[in-house]
Length: 89
Image (cartoon, rainbow, N blue to C red; front, side, top):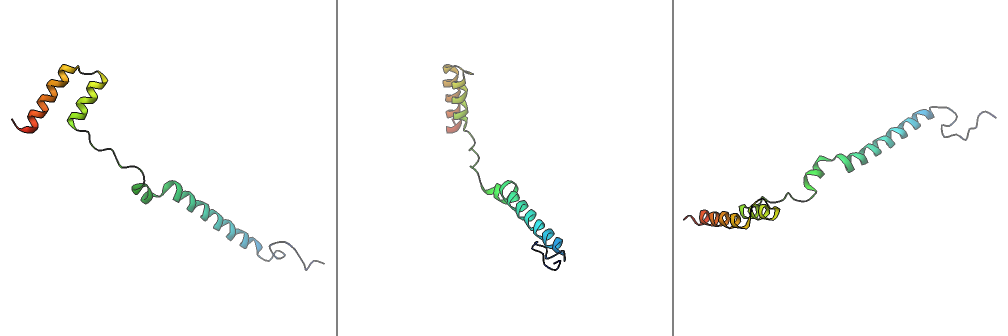
């Protein structure tokens, strides 16, 4: 009557060790998945978009004109100064 048990632990003969091992394995799997998804530094370094290239002086000048920081006359004067500087005259 007491010799048979349909529990996982086989009647109390160290079944808690099996349960403990299964819990540790489950925790390790969860931690590994979370580490891979959220915190893998090697994956972060290679994924994602490339950083934007540095804007040229002409692009910055055009952006300032578009934002209204400078007027068209000042834009043309500064653009002329830039082209003179680039040609070396």
